[in-house]
Length: 256
Length: 82
Image (tube, rainbow over the protein chains, first blue to last red):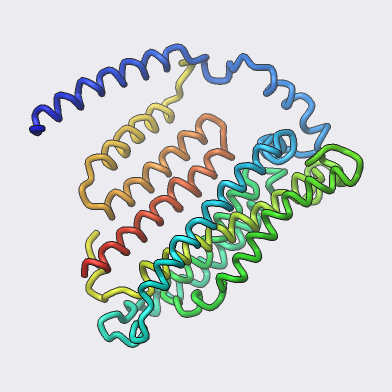
């Protein structure tokens, strides 16, 4: 296939895609004019029912918590798959002289980067804890907070303290944390059954609207989800880092 | 499509520009950087449509996780070749 033919094929199919996209977009209801009833109902009763001011969190981990449970296990399965795949590769390539290979020294960083890395990592970690613990009050929650928390050790790694990072979150501890986070979600759901209510029904004390301990299981689920997400994210990143960055030739890091 | 604010028009243009830049970039590291920028612009777009929760998720996945995985994969393939 010549380049001209390929370009002609691309342009003609893009014209069809653009036409259908434009046609579909023109049919969309105006912004804020969604005709379904659920948004309005949640808006009216959500804050009184659940004492959570962030109704997106309330929908995600309370009203439709079973959907979020499924999504959490997508991430759990993905992390497990990455671990299984990369472990097999690591065993294949393990050599006794890998650490001592003179061509595979880790690239150095400057004192300035190291000095900036620590406060940055601390700030990012604190921000993550804030986002995950205020999920029921302000935008954010377990997923977003968990990813931000997981970025904190990554910043430490990027700042050059990679040996520390390699030892600080050992893979086994991360696996345990991931399991506790994923199992915690189910445990909160089963607690509802044990209390004589439905699976994942909000049976914890609701507290007063606007306080940190309000909204019952919404706050609890946000915390366990953040543990699961942070651990899964760190597991994936650390497996990739071990594969890609810890052992690599010094000449191979340029380009960009 | 309802009323569109000036900021939304700016964001639309930036999304189109960043998306085109991702497609046209030949250097994979540049692709990761442009993808990260696209995620950031999309996050601003969600924010202008009053969806801060989605915006935070977009930053986490689109601006951080995806470009990071691409960078690591690129680094991995390069260290094998070298």
